[in-house]
Image (cartoon, rainbow, N blue to C red; front, side, top):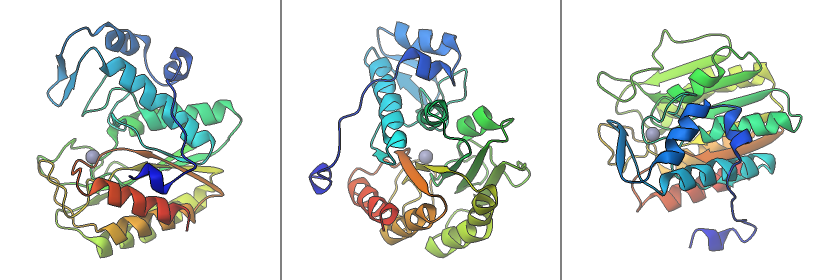
Length: 259
Ligand SMILES: [Zn+2]
C-alpha cells in the first residue's frame, strides 16, 4: 500500500563486504555470517540464520537510497551499531555504511540528522573523530532510557546531542531542531544530509519507556526542515515499532522531504 503511493520506488540490493568493511570490523561480519540458529547477541539484540542476509540487504539498500537522494525502507535499523558489534536491534550501521559509499563516490562534507527517539550511539562512535562528518541527534534522555548516551555533556564541534525530557511533543522537538540542529548543520554547510529517520518518538509508540508526543504532522515538518538544510537529502529508516502508525509516519516524512 505504501509503495503503491510511490511508483518510482526500486528494489534494494545487498551490500558487499568491501562496503561494510569501510565501517565495521571484519570480526563482526564474520560473526553475523556464521549464525546458523537463533542467538542472543546482547540483551536487546537477537539474530538467526536469516539475519546476515537481512542486514546486508538493509545496508546495500541504504547505499542505493543515499546515492540517489532517496529513502531506504529497511530493517533491521542501524544507528546503535558501532564498528565492532551488534547492539540495540542493530546489526550493521546502515547510515554510516551508506555515507561512506557516498564519500567513495566523491561526496565531501556530509551531515547526519538523527530524529529517532533513541540516541544513535553507534553512528556517533563511527564519526566521533571525523571532522568531515557532522552528527546531530535529537532524542529522549532520561534515567534508564536506552542507550543512556547522548547527554548534555556529550558534545563536540561535529557532534551535536540534543537530549529531550520525556513528554516532549511537536513544539519542543521543532524548537530544539531550530535552536540546535539547524544552525549547526547550516554552519557545517554539507553537500549531503543523511537522515536517520526513526519514528519511535511518535505519540502512539509503544516501545518500552519511549515517551514522546511527536505527531504525524510533526514528522512531516521535521522532514521538511531537514530538506531545507542541504542541496541533497536522503533518509534511512531507523526505529518506529507501532506497525499501525509507521506507514502513515513514513509517508508524512516522504511528503516533508519532497515538499
Ligand atoms: Zn529508536
